Structure formats: C-alpha cells, structure tokens
Length: 235
Image 1 (cartoon, rainbow, N blue to C red):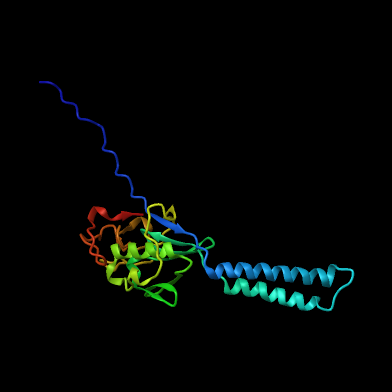
Image 2 (cartoon, rainbow, N blue to C red):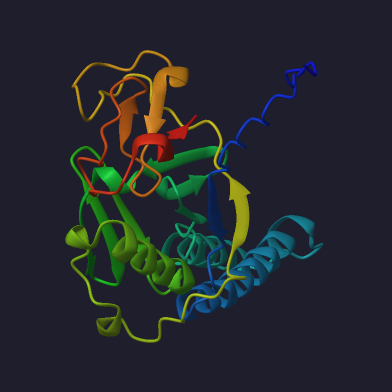
C-alpha cells in the first residue's frame, strides 16, 4: 500500500479587512474669497500704518488710524471667513472632523439623526453633534448622504434633492486614508452590554461600525441588521 503523506501546507490566513475613509479639504466659497480679499486689503492698510508711524522719517497724523483700521479689517476677515472650515473624513468608521492632529469622530451606529439646518449638515448623536458647513464641503456632504442611506437610512432626515448644487459622488473624490487609532476601549458590547477593556477583544460591524465583544458577536447587527458572524471586523 502506498504511503500517503499528509500535507503540511497551511491555508493562508485571511487578509484583514483594511478600513478606509475619504478625506475632504474645504472647498473655496464666496465667503472665503471675500475674506481673503478683505484680509489682503486689511494687511496693506496695516502695513501702511506701521510704516507711516514707526518707519517713516515724517510720521503722519493719520498713521494710528491706518494701523487701527488695518488691524480691525484683518481680524474681521479671519473671524468671519471660512477659518472654521476644517477637513472632513467619511468612511467605514463614520464621519470625522479633523482639527490639526485631532479627530472628532461620530460613528454611523451612534448617529440618531442627520439633517440640514442654517447652511450646515448636522449629524447628531447622544453625546456628540457634528456640524459641517455645506458650502465649504459640498462633496463631503454628498458622500455623507450617499453612505448614510446605504448604512443607516432610518437616521437620514434629509433628501439630497433638497440641497442645491451637490455634486454626484465620484470614485476619485477625496483622498483615501486608512482608519487608525479607532478607540473602542470603554464602550459596551451592543449585544451583551459588557464593557470592552481592550481593542483586541472588540469586533465591528462592517456597515455601521457598531461594537461587539469578539465572543458575543450576533448573527445580525442590532443596529443596522446587517449580517455579521465572520464578517465582523477585527481591529
């Protein structure tokens, strides 16, 4: 009888799903163009006042007024312009606002209502509310609505048709960036209610990013009703 050798070849491990999001820079708006123009004019007036008051051989009486008007104009341009418009991220983990090196993130599963108000798209959760200026983030808003309808249509309280001049989402919109440093420690498993102490013990719903303990993952997500089981994402 021929000897049958067992194969020692191991099946390749399943590749971990890479969680991604799109990063959108603020778009130029009418307000930003006006603020830039006003800032440039204010800077010129401020420079003229400084030169006339301290650098000129013959200081003029109007110099202090030029200095004051220029400083006020420059400050107003920065304050009332789009200085508050910051990059926005949209992807597997929800919606995030980027402020320097810090991210303020609202997961899809934590959203209670998404609506428009006074020129802003508002994503409201129990403990956090994000406000995104629509004029400065038309493409990002279009993606939030598109992704939101696919993931959690029940919380989307805004019709895309009601927002004027939103572009159609395109595959090349924004810049793809990996989702890193997602904090789930301290949250509670949505199925068992038990606290999650370590990221390695957590599993995420691939649709709404709801959080579960790895040994408490249900067959379907309790938030979005998506099929889970082996589809749950490991951090």
